[in-house]
Image (cartoon, rainbow, N blue to C red; front, side, top):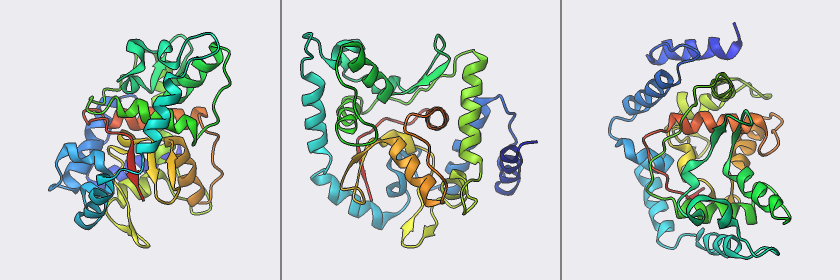
Length: 278
């Protein structure tokens, strides 16, 4: 049996989670969400989109002060400008998406049954640029993060409703994302779940670890540590590096599958990006 499966079972026993089968995502989701509801009984389910600010009052006060003059507003404005800028052929990014591209960020990530892989918003943006003879954008920060910030902003308030098609490749992508989340890695031999499930709400140095539930809802984010807006995959890489593991490339299958899994785990919550975090 693979180590990540052993870890998942052990964690379920210790934390009182129901044991779930490998290929039953909906049971996984229910157990995942019930765990956080029980761990933080005074936190309303809808509040988990706010990360650590949903579970710690002092942190929330600081966050609310930042939100009075959101540091990501410039990114939204610059993202909108790029989004509406005409290509050499007269088209725009909006022409590649339904409804002109407003309010469609909730459709990503998704599993493309024709291509047999998870497609993220960043991939869709760059494929649109390439198809129209434009230069693609560099990953993680800068223009790509700004465009995602604008598209996320126009999608605020929609429900997360990730779907797993009836396709064994889609289930496999979900399972690989789940495996990544629970697998130990790096010199510190830690998994994503060690911090954001087992120790959610506990302190690591001066910071409180956020619950994994709702993590995807507020990206891209302006982090004070970055002093700019960055993408979800940039954060994945940072977490890998913090446990002294080699990070994967942005938009790698590993990170796309992880995003697919985490998005499904957050079904029922609300998209509220872009956000601001430490």
